[in-house]
Length: 492
Image (cartoon, rainbow, N blue to C red; front, top):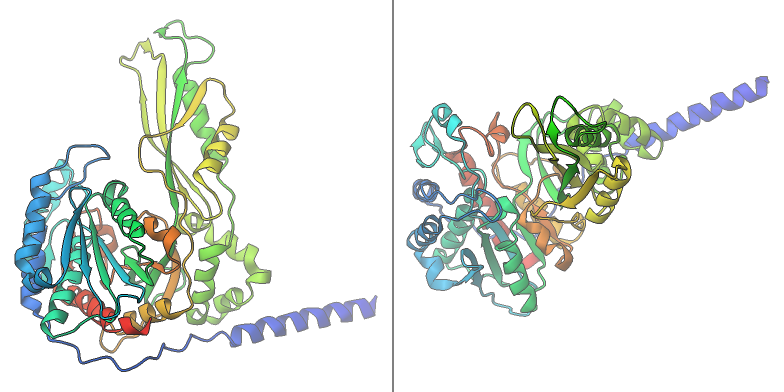
């Protein structure tokens, strides 16, 4: 018995030593090196703010999939780009795709080199009438005040469109010629799925034989407190995004007077179905982009947490339980279930013959829209309930892009030069929302999602929320990012 105990003690000590050694060896990756970049051209910072402000004043709103579009607002935005960036429009070719989306082509010195695609979207979400009094500056004022440009789209996502155009205009004026072709793709319906904008652009370019070496769209951020355990400012870059499907649950039963209800009512059956779905969440898995994110976080964590991240082979279940204790961590590891809409009845004493509900699912990599529907039907298991996809965008999870190779190295190096004197950690992660980049997933293994604007306190809540704004300094960082990215295009 004594020998067994000694052996166990030795085993535990040895295991602890191995785990400690693995944690001690977990160091931040070396900063990417590369050829010295050309001098940074002078940026017209004041003019850039005015041009962004002018873009905000065009209310290019996407209300809902299939809803009427204010085409005049979008065409006004298009004209604003023409007048704001004359050199770009004299040098690049511009095409209208899907009526209101834009595709710019900047031909490179080597037409055989794989191109770069820079994405953004022109449309914005609406502002509820009830929230208007709470805005410091009206949502489409484009006011420049207190060091900020204010209005809907300053963060999501006209800032990307305008900062790309500023970078291109600035580089053209400096005499820069890209070593490879650059495509600028600006969709008009990203906020409702991008089915008629970004998808049409991707289809057009793929039909022309375009195979990008690098695709960049919105999706990640640079900010403090983005991930549990990390208080320093870091950049999270989406290397994949979840899929999306909304399912309509329909329950039917005999209607009639509420004084004589049948054994099962349409409302009761629908309520039980939704309750069943919430009581049986999708299983969690600590794999794919989320595992890669945790491993990349490890070198920057306190030692106790670093110990866990360096030894996920053993500590994985504990880390999984810890992550699952908050909604963000749970969403990173599973397909989420979110009831969002309910409809039934016309009067308080009338039994409705039909009740409907909509449940939205964000699908993690490893599952598909088809497997989600199959599981929902199995969990509900009720002949009174029919399940069908809602007439909205349906997307499977995107492929996972590489975190090795020249495209990732260029992106990482560019991010570390955004803010003078600061070299933030660059962490890959799984985007839980949807972006237009998903349409490039089948055609490139270097599709990344990153909004190059350093976010301050409360800025994440401003996206789709109240008082959306961008600071002059942070917008300048976005322009710098795209200039430096394009200057490094020859390294791919």
